[in-house]
Length: 190
Ligand code: GAR
Image 1 (cartoon, rainbow, N blue to C red):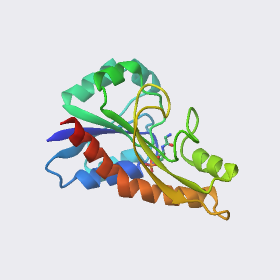
Image 2: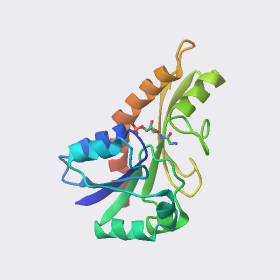
Image 3: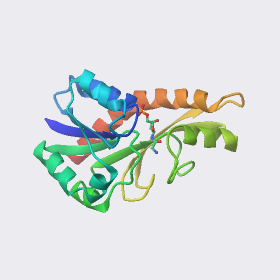
Image 4: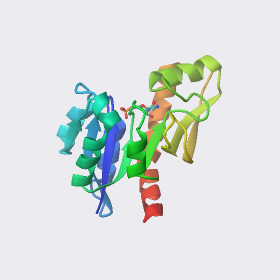
């Protein structure tokens, strides 16, 4: 059985969806949720899901030796960033080469980079007058929202859509595709 760790900073609806997807899998399970904010709602979800959760400070994350030990203790094979807002340190990337995946709620390379997360991304899409948005699932290579793209899916953006409307469409794409694409990427590493 492969072990997945999910890193999240906020609500954690993707973390919950991914944990549920793998709950009956014989291939992989979500064994750990890592949050960098002790108030993050993802911690409530972890309790409900009966998934172990730990919180770390930004400094602990950046230093990352203790975190790598925690991951090793639990035989973590694969890391999923699901609404995680800190830049991943090189040491962690080196410990999990090709094994850290992120989801971005837009069609990269548009609307990405430092400070572009959650609602800000959808506001940027609407402000730009884009006619479509979507999701990008990509490997982490040390820079915000860069790295090999594995998968994109699109949704239309209507002239009347608010950032909230776009967020709903994008979340629906995330819930539909992210768990399956994670599984596909993990299989490609077997
Ligand atoms: C998701 O839409 C995810 O794509 C986005 O944050 C949201 C988290 O929602 N990630 C980024 O913006 C990263 N740049 P959730 O906490 O409910 O899963």
